[in-house]
Image (cartoon, rainbow, N blue to C red; front, side):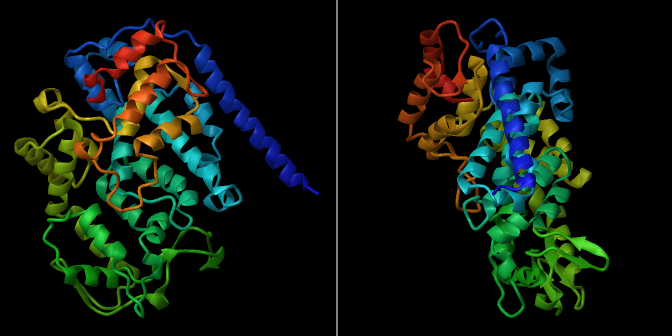
Length: 442
């Protein structure tokens, strides 16, 4: 027999889910702005690079504010969000519930909800630059949701770390990520002890999260960093420690598993007896290092402009050093540079293509399984890249799988995707516009 508590929870869940469906329907019924083809001018290029794609609504917002103010408002991420988006997101269990509560639900359902949330935010948020950077940092700190219980922890990590620091301080984000249960479990640091050292997380922390593959570290540095991180793991119980409740699923430092001897990591001496401070000291050293700034500058410039630009990268690096890793200050010179407008075309990855198509067509969607199926066929199901390096960003990786892209465009324009509705007055015209070669690019 179902308990009263379970019945109330089920009723509450149905009520919240109903709000999400009503929000989707309200967006579908809302009068669409007059359809206009995307122009080929400076404003369209800026919008394409700052956002997940040009739309009539975004073009009107840009025109009303002017270029400079529009960029500053996006940097501040202070636009009010649409009510429909808020309701749709709140209907998702992966956002409302604790990871261990989510374990009571089917794994596939939670994964689908995570993917829905990503699509909805990238498509409908008014703070588009923040959403682009959430995508960037989530890929930078990639976690494969399919490993162990990653599906259940990814949403919490995304909300509490990636979204919190997307336009904040890189060091704060990286240090928070170093204690993320999702990351520690994914990269096997919960099995890293003084008796059985595991170098997996230490290696990726240097190679992918901070210094970069050419950052100058050695295998010895990786081994020493792994020693610093022994005992860093996820708490699998709920216990009281020194009159403080340490919740199940939170970060835990196991002193008994920690190597407390002296260490030397990438030019930094770590004295014996430091305990948890060993890892904290080294992570702080890495996130402030100039090599980390160089690595991030190269990635950010390429992400927004489509290519390398040594002069611009040097400016971003200078901002990294002077501001001690403030992301807003690192990004601003990129967004106001000539390279943003004059850079080479950037081929949209499948996630970007889907969101850009939804935006330019004024579509209403729940971001659900039917849409996600197209994304999977294109090769980029969100949060399902198994390697720690994140989905490829080079164009060649995506240029050889064009048929699923064309099929998606056709199905979208002709109303063949369940729970996704296009308001364009002429489906054939929309299909032709979306299928033009230049639409594949930002």
